[in-house]
Image 1 (cartoon, rainbow, N blue to C red):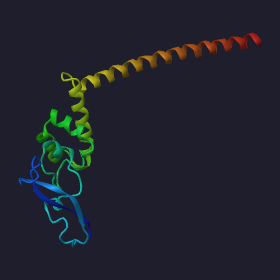
Image 2 (tube, rainbow, N blue to C red):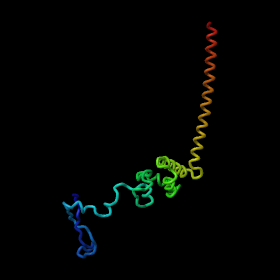
Image 3 (cartoon, one colour):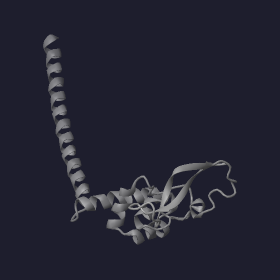
Image 4 (tube, one colour):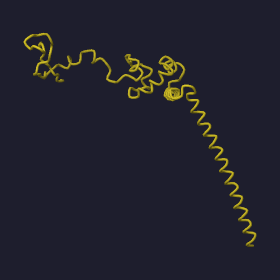
Length: 173
């Protein structure tokens, strides 16, 4: 059995305590020791789930049902993920994508991609993630050129070393 705090309430006017008019807690409060467990928590709050709503339902200010499509992908601890997706793609498009267009086993990858693309679009409204892809392609191209140059230098140094070794072998014999 849970113990509940029971407050004694009385009416009084804060300006004139002799005149009643406002409900205030009395100075003394007492505990109710034995409340039957069948009567504890019979209100609406006890019928609600113990888990927090997903970030999508929290941002959209709606009740999060047990079959909410966003629960596995947007936990309440990461509201910024859904905020970015909602701002760029909208709730309806994200929901349609997850329900109809993507197989359930690829849902997590789809959400990771949507969040990345939404954040890229928020950083760069004109090019979005294309700017990141282009920068990475340019960097990869530069690295390939550096690698080719390093291989060419190594090949030249190796041929010089081999010619020096062959010269030393011929001069020593």
